Amino acid sequence: MPSSPLLSSLAHVVRSLRTARGLTQASLAKTARLSPRFIADLEAGRANISLLKLSAVAGALSTTIAHLVVEAEQGTESAAPVRVLPRSVALVGLRGAGKSTIGKAAAQRLGVVFVELDRVVEERAALSLQNIFDIHGDAYFRKMEAEALVQVLGGKEPSVIATGGSLVMHEKSWARLRKQTTTIWLRSTPEDHYARVQAQGDLRPMSGRPQAMMELRRLLTAREPHYKRADHTVDTSKHTIAESVERLVELATRAPA
Image (cartoon, rainbow, N blue to C red):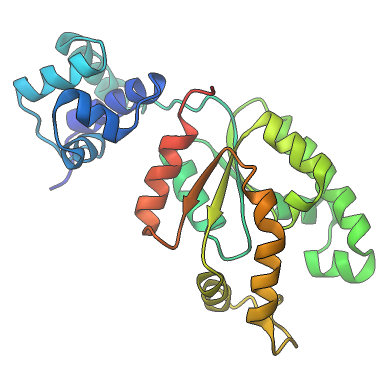
């Protein structure tokens, strides 16, 4: 059922209040004594909510029915969704974890810019990543990556940033990222990493390597302790893309501790 402008606006109001209070959909549902599915539908603009249920949601959000309705009606007039993103979000993980797919979708949901750090590096160097490594080597790439990171983090507005898989191995850049953003590790199994990269037609990590899967497992094992230092983890092998996006949005809009 398509969402009406009023229900869509109410969804944004509820999501904004929930995230501002540091609540998950599950905790809001528990407090309001409603099902998690209903809260999910409400925040998606699909729930034609009754007066009693709206009262329960308002109470759980420490507000009133009147406030929710007035804010929703004002939202339909301005057609501007309410977004709450306390700080930029940085996604880390191996290639094939879903950083681009999930990151783009989450940025759209949040109404912010999506940035791929590798593309910023390419723009600064006026070369493709492959040519950067072939011509200048790893040290030059790391220098350009660090400069690109400073550039991206210097933006005035929060964004969703997809980082290169190896950034966590370079302590200065990884420390800067953890200090200035909410970091989220998009975790996945080696099999899923391999399959997704192949599906994208990107065979760089596997080219000329008959033991590619074994190497991928070793790479993940080596980097995992660093990835675990991220603020949060989303397992993209255990969840669908839509579920992963929803989880990422919840974590991104949670007030920093």
